[in-house]
Amino acid sequence: MINTSSYLAKYFPTSLSKSLIMVAALSVAVVVSGCQKEPETNTANDSAQATSTQTNEVQTTQSEQTTTSVEQQQAPLTILALGDSLTEGLGVDNDDNYPAQLEARLKELGYKDVKVVNSGLSGETSTGLVNRLNWVLQTKPDITILTVGANDAIRGIDVATVEANIRTAVKRLQDGGSEVILGGMQIYDNLGSDYVESFAAIYPRVAKDMNVTLIPFFLDGVGGDPKLNQADAIHPTKEGYTIIVDDNILPILQPELEKLEANSKASSTGTPTETAQ
Image (cartoon, rainbow, N blue to C red; front, side, top):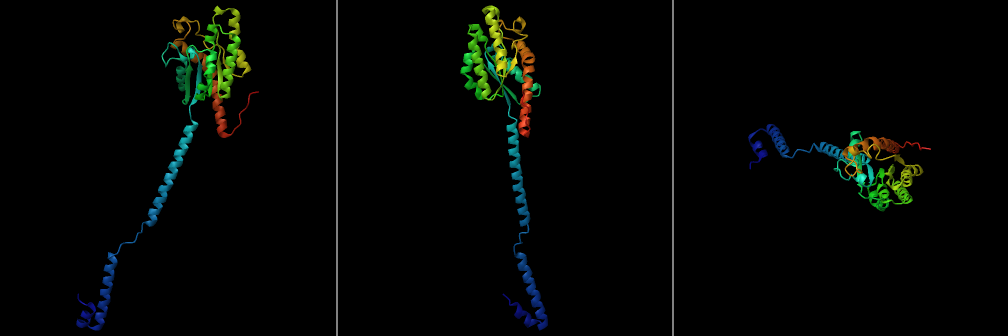
């Protein structure tokens, strides 16, 4: 390798050689500088981007939590249809019994989050219904439409026993947090006028004593009409159930739904609700 300083001193005057030496040194410095790695000028930008990403993730998590909370608040309103074969819908398709028709009508009316649970059991007596209350209460109903007693009457079961069972059922449902709507029943005169009158009087008496809403006669407008009942003259057809839902149940049920909605809104805003005197 050639010694730059000696070479310049030998062949060029001293002052010129010094100038050239400085130029050469500067050139080498520039070359070396150019070969070095450029400083990381984007560190601040990268940090800002990372912070922005973390903020977005937190916001997304908060949004998801809010959505979950709203979904929980909009959980379905549960209506329990509790009773015997008149509730179950013996002899009609699953979509034609009164609980199914009631849910469909409520959704048409704007109650999108309502769910009607069919807990009717063919042959059910008031005693049998009381015995399965623990099971049906697992549905946690907001409202229960209780229709029972017809099979007791067919068997000629003592009126006092039927009434005691209905009272027990109402109290257990109320204790479970459910509003009760009691479906009144009437029977044919084949068991004698005293029994018929005593049986029919159960429902308004229980409703008054236990502060529950009463459907005066669940089968009103349908019972006894051959065109609206099946061949057994006991169980309604699809068309019969439509009348029961539209004319007998909805006029009683809708005010109860409005009360529940008002109480729910008051609870969420902390506004006290008026208590009926």
